[in-house]
Image (cartoon, rainbow, N blue to C red):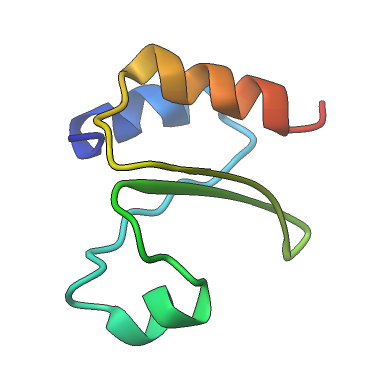
Length: 74
């Protein structure tokens, strides 16, 4: 559901890179990152995870943007 919004996030946060993975196709990476619920949103800064938004509910663009705003350091 969020894939169509990736461009909006990239525009709103130009200093950050955004990646989308298919958990079923990249199961080893999902296990490594301990991604068991989808959709999941993880934030990394300098290689360290600084935030994680996971629950089974669909998330709106606004919910994810609020999560990013609260998580990243500016």
